[in-house]
Image (cartoon, rainbow, N blue to C red; front, side):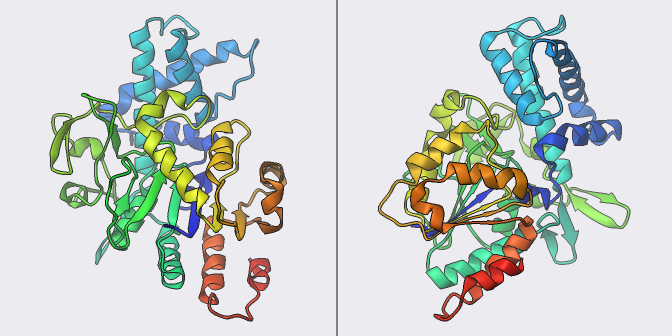
Length: 381
């Protein structure tokens, strides 16, 4: 069982090129304008853009941030639930269903094009950024604690997945409680789904397209100036909407299994219950919890209750450290969020993902020194 749990938010993947929630749609529009979305997804981009324009009509009666992908995703899902959408173009339930599918594809292609792998002489490397040295930090923690840390992430992209794979870690997405652990296997718990997850057609289960498969690693890359980039292009690698997983051939719904970061997640309970349960279990036995790049938005009541119920356990939390550059807005949220039992263990550092990894590495390198005071290094970053 893990002694240390990392909780990663959008700020971690931003370091690898992924946009934040409030500039996500701007990035998507630029991809469309530059022709980088590809002809296959052009209609999806146009459908989503048109629907967002229709949402402007409700501004006189309701405040909705049409520039934030979280609010757009949640609005589309609510429209699907109540079978109602503003404007005249989207009137039927099947039109709203198609809109939600298109938005998922827009999210997929935007993240896929924003976080490419880098082609080097020794093969494919993780996206530019700090996930590589983050995995090196995990290795150091393993050596010191003799246990594999858990990574809980709110991000859809595959940057951390590939970094873990590249450094030899088998990934356990925690879909079932019966999965047997391998040596070095790491729990990668993606609370909101992932670009390489798909829903099975026959029953409510999640089927991952494993990133270590040969088809994911063939030479299928895009050259930009002097830099060579490799896009995952998962849709191009799936044949006849089928995925082979654990020796079985599954028919899948051809859209990534991702869910809105806000609003009601209970409608996804059947598919994600095991994943969320494992997150709660790992939090309950954690002694060190490091939250990096996650801003604890006021709309995310789900994580508030997941943490409250999940962190209840016999273990005493030694560290509850937050790393986020937005101290003004984020620090007060966490101060209000945590209970009295861990207020003395709470630390906030206004810093980036890259700097937080460097800081923790320095601290863990001194792990065995009984005279070491971590505050000196913590204050340095």
